[in-house]
Length: 104
Image 1: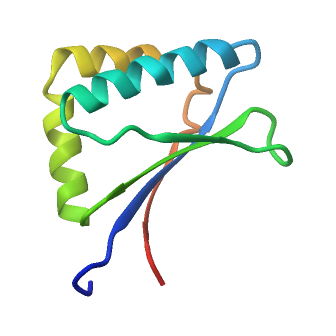
Image 2 (image 1 turned 90 degrees about the vertical axis):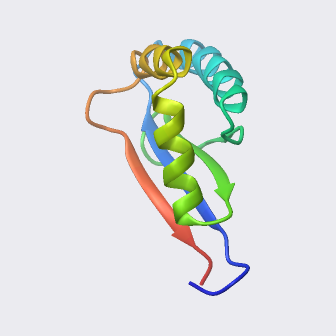
């Protein structure tokens, strides 16, 4: 990795049918909890084509080490863990996919 490069963490979600608003509300709560524990707020992108109710969230980090350290610390926080668990209720089981993207 070259100096000055950043890491973009992107997550692909498939939201259960009938749960879209619950997911959006859950993401608002998740982002509030995330920023409280030092994570960046994640942007939300929805797909207009392809898989039904496919949503992507993403945030940028200074490095992969910063990303992993921030997530590890966040998951030790009970309020963040609760927000994460609540958000998961709106997702199709097994559909979440993480990407750590580096600038080409």
